[in-house]
Length: 267
Image (cartoon, rainbow, N blue to C red; front, side, top):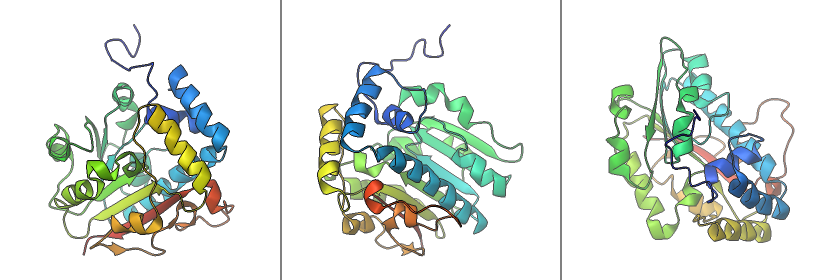
């Protein structure tokens, strides 16, 4: 019996989560995903570095927030599990930390058990939900049983909002999501930008759109707008590999990542 029996994976249609898995060197991807990802890599071979840099930022930002006392995390757009996952990083600092993962790709659901192997003291949960359905996501079974929205938590929207174009109300969506968060909560984000490699980025957008996936790169000012009303942590909205790099970490040119990162706290 296959892990995927009874799951409609739409294997003939590329999916952003499986393409991302391919960029990271994973094996949970299929021919359509690899073909579309191959078109992207032909345009910009540095996308593999960008995917790794995005993972590195997730690790660093999670550690920073956990060390600052946050012990609840809501990670939307989780993607295919790639260890160390967010809960492993957070629970390595707070063994009692609680983490909820959310994604709308059915293949992520089939691998959700890999996201649920946390510490005995902590708790992890997975919900199948779409970020564009905020009410449904927040009401999903398992979310409110795992995290307490009256206490601070970190909302992770890494490599997600560039898949929500302005026409679908990206800024309003973030406002609805963050409106339920308690003071002291954190908003964590990475986002594709055209600022450093405009021609390649425009062509990448075209590949995703041709594959049926909406994609919108945003400038630094447009990314910073998501943090309006929040207090940005140093160093602000910066190329994602520049957000508090680990000591000795080799620098990567901004054009080889084409993304911004930021972390902010709700006053």
